[in-house]
Amino acid sequence: MSTPISNTTLSHANLSNMQARDMASLLHPFTNLLTLRQTGPLVLERGKGVFVYDGAGKDYLEAMGGLWCTALGWGEEELVQAAAEQMRKLPFAHIFGGKSHEPGIGLAEKLKEMAPFPVGKVFFANSGSEANDSQIKFMWYAANARGQKNRKKIIARSRAYHGVTLASASLTGLDAFHKSFDLPFDFTVRVECPHYYRGAEPGESEEDYSARLARNLDAAIQREGPDTIAAMFVEAVMGAGGAMVPPRGYFEAITAVLDKYGILLVDDEVICGFGRTGNAFGCQTYNYQPDSMSIAKALSSAYMPISAVLLSPELVEIIEEEAVRIGGLWHAFTYSAHPVAAAVALKTLEIYQRRDTFGHVRKVAPHFQARLKALESHPLVGEANGVGLIGAIEMVADKKSKKNFEAAKGVGTKCGQICQEEGIIVRPLLNDRIALCPPLVISEAEIDELFDRFTRALDRTLDWARRETLI
Ligand SMILES: Cc1ncc(COP(=O)(O)O)c(C=O)c1O
Image (tube, rainbow, N blue to C red):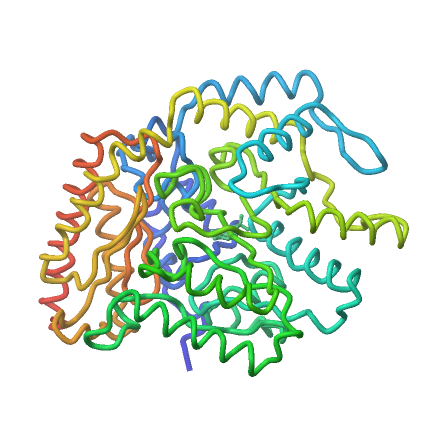
């Protein structure tokens, strides 16, 4: 049995006043609470560009863009202005009961224009999880409207991350998000995660691996009954599950299977949307066409909480017909299309276009990817891979056999702590993977600084692992 948290020894003597206030009041998510009680939280005070600073003035290169989201970096004055102007003019208005406002309309129009697939209308929410829950409800609503009452199952992949609300967490394919929460709900059909480094058979090409995954998907659909499945959710690059790029031919192979059975493809672009992979959307980088899309995070460069669901004209038509039939579309949030969030998102999209932010990503990505790939020669690193300005390394106990460290040894977490000491913020993920996802505005010199700091941290993690006789 694990130690009850109330029995752990607290060492608060060295905590700052702010840390002590945090520990007495904030419930910390995605955190090892036992470790936190020993170390206290990192309390950030301000940010500029790709750096954030703590109360003592120490700088950290934010190599995760916050949570894969602060695309324009910190201190973007135009976004501050956009928020302030909208707050003065119309700080709140909703879109219930036939009301509307200009920022909401303008943002919906802009997203329709930018979308890489035909979009009928846009639905707004506040977070990626809410967008994905809305997607699931829309899929069920559309199935009911079509008289396909059994088409309610949703396919999602192991190690997928689609959020934490009840339905989106059910699609999330990571055990930690289900344990003790009585999840996942049983509408979820789980299929394999496409990770060539771990999943391919010896000697299997990327294309053959993709074809095998598509055959397995086909078999899963047959097993469940094709007419019981509404949709499949995908991320172009799997984010929180490990920052893993798909193998060559993967999306071509799986979309052919979905098309065969009339199963809709929901594209979760919450991380990949808006330039992360070098194109506006991840589905453009990997050449597939969804029926609907979830976006959030970089939509407003994370300066305001806002997310959206982009729906194909066919889905909009069927949803609106059903809403007319039953007397309304009874699904939205108080803050759907919040005018301040919408104004900030519109300004963000304007900046991306005016400054050619996605072009900048294409320009600096080869340098980022080359420095990332070079880490594969480090004694701790089994895989180093990515696309655009996203990537990850996987640390292994034995490079040849690809053997992972025991999870209980906490190698990834240790590396994350050392990174912090070295002035770089990264994200440790499952299987001792460390994700990198810096602001899109990062320069080549800052990319060098990122990898210099990261390499120092990896060297120190290696020294520690050797002292602990883990390697
Ligand atoms: C791909 C993806 N979908 C959905 C979500 C959930 O978004 P949120 O945390 O805003 O609810 C995330 C969050 O990281 C994500 O990465």
